[in-house]
View 1 (spheres, chains in turn purple, green):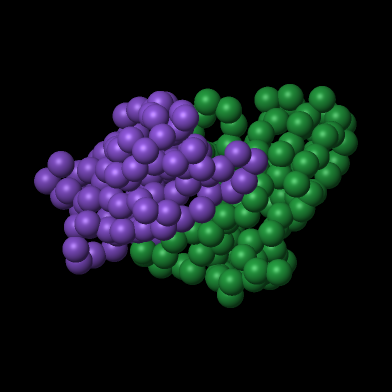
View 2 (view 1 turned 135 degrees about the horizontal axis):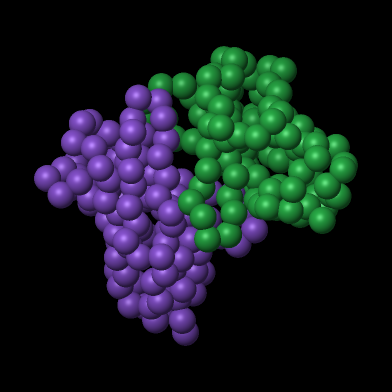
Length: 111
Length: 113
């Protein structure tokens, strides 16, 4: 079974600052990687996914993530955050038709 | 409607009640999932249905009973719940196979009193 580690449970950041949310996974075999966002009182929404090809993946709302196979990481980044990015972010790994979610990182964007 | 819908959005029930949560997907997917999301806990996968057959049951207490009458609908029947069952219950759907993302509904906020 896979394990997905999101190292930071909460990340406070000021508006217009850059942010990086970290995600590491356990497996060395081929996996598919995802980032989801959850706004208050809503379900999870897909931000971006990595299946193959370029290791830099661009998603919605200006987010991007970089797949690093040697470090088994898939960190999420945004160069300039907005108040509206305040939400919880989940990293997920798909392996043989199973999904494994991290415990989530709450991003709190302050004015 | 599009995507994945869930009803009701909020539910308060006593420990002796029986209620059902409903999920409907309009995406033509063939796999559906129930998750439990509690405060300060990771997302917990409860049940997986693939092609209308239950393929996974992650040690969920029998007071939760899923039903998948067809590939578009998924129910979670609840009876004699405990206060610790209070949580956000999320339904998701996907196309079966590696690499397909899951699409989530908005969830049902359940409070057991």
